[in-house]
Figure 1 (cartoon, rainbow, N blue to C red):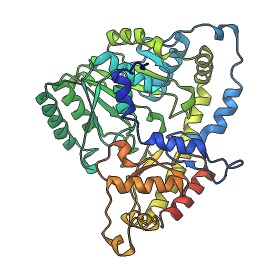
Figure 2 (tube, rainbow, N blue to C red):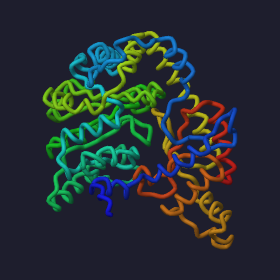
Figure 3 (cartoon, rainbow, N blue to C red):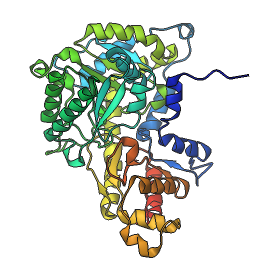
Figure 4 (tube, rainbow, N blue to C red):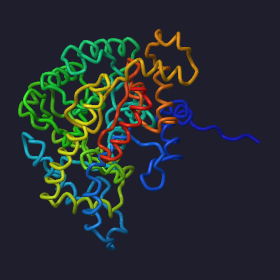
Length: 441
């Protein structure tokens, strides 16, 4: 008796499991807890803003009891009250050139679903989506697992990631795509950037828009860390939402531009699964997204609770100020640790993490401690993708610190890691202490 085979899409997904899923399995079996498992694995990898968790828990517990209407279906793309509060958030904090209105917004159950819906709405199976590297680790699967669009990771030296000079790499990618008789349909950007933690300078964004216009691409700009900018000092590239550009149409047809945001990062609410898509300039796209939105339903209770949360403008605005202050403090502690231990890192101004490269001596000493090399061979060790994985697994399994390796972000150099600093202060202290010992610093 034979068993029916899975679909080709399902079989392909089994071959593409992200390497970080292995870490999730390890952490799930041995999670750190100050009270019940102090020797467990600290999660310093997932971008979760835990600096404001106590404030949020107290507030959310005060908000909403279950009522009859919570047991019914709600609007799959967000009711008018919820979308009205999201519009107010944009109007207060994103400096839009024109006021955002509720009808500009489609609410989803997280930005993973939002990205997938946009891939469905703009791409045919096999169409290419251009993404600069390094980039958010889950983008490829978000776009390809079900929509079957294909991510093209555009590689470049790290020093070009915030430079107009990177456009040449995108032009080459277009040539290569067309030479294969394929089609590019979207340019996907994150500003503030994940994993670099900086905002794109306006001239770079302008160059991206002009490039996309030349090649008739949609431009999706994920601004999920927009309200986690913690350094606005002189000389720092400021975050400027694409919504704030009054002259957007000088560089691209605005109907090609889409903005993403949501609860997960700026509000420390990963588990509430709520994101939103905003496009004031393309009602046809929004109508198509309405038709996809039943696949991104959220519980009616969640929508009502978040509407109540966002409607308390004083609390929200003060929460963001507090969050940015605490993020700045944790970043400074992390940056000082890197500097004092000779760890290369990208100075950041936004987000929840720092992009760092461990010294090659860490690699050599790890390999030697694991018996992979002799002391005589240590001086010849270089970073490679394989060695990066060895160090990564050692940090998780033996030093009990999880931070994802650079290759999960399509980094082209070995030795890079993304360290989340937006954890509680005691956990950050312990993380840096364990790293100091585990990395032989």
